[in-house]
Length: 345
Image (cartoon, rainbow, N blue to C red; front, side, top):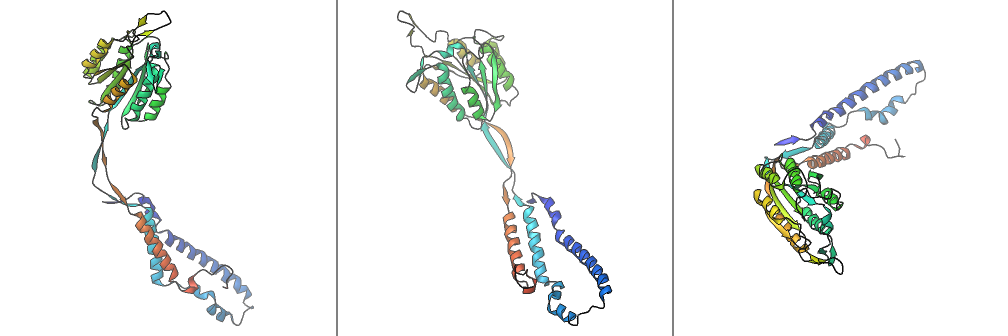
């Protein structure tokens, strides 16, 4: 159907007629005043006054040709119609977004400073590698709502669920080890995510939790939190990060496993209870593969909306108004055109 986006503009249609009427009233008032003044000067008469009026500008008070007035009115009407923005609005088309509500929970306990990972041929900390890999993962989730939870002794919502992925990435890069405490509250982190995700539509709730340790603090056990998540259809994927190659501290130090504190059984149980998967990332390459697998999970349909295709036609009326205006101007007799500056009158 045809609609007008700015229909109140049509109220300007009678504006020229109103201005013309006001001009006539003004000219009549001026004419009466001039006649009254001239009556006092009746003795001063010019013999050829009538002839001068007939040969000069007196004919300009006559109305212009009717067809010229008609074109001018049509040009004005077309201009107003163009300003009203006529549109053809088509039938409603349902549009769906492939998206999900996804929280990323990142462990910031001091053990994330362990330098047992390699990034770009340089040994670096687990947290630095996590930031780089998760940052790429976030950039590929365009269309998803992503939130960020940072946890240590306590969990914190660093970024609520949002489409602003750039802000989430920035907040992740600003995270520092120990800023959430020195312990690891995995259960509380899951509980906080459950609290935020339970209000979102079902089949669209996902938590990806990354840690390098075991649950050492918190008010809720990871198993209990996982059961609460399962009851609310929240799927949890867990990631255990850290190398298991023995390292030696000092010249006479005994070799030790840097991932000895990682509770893989717990992480696997949490994932199983919620229908998710547990992933083990011993190197940067494995961590990248883990997030690639998660990234390839089929998204669900969300936020179905109706879209009406719209076609604008204002430009046609604008060209019509321009053409009619030029035509009405060019076809006027010469006496109706404005004199050139400095020309004879």
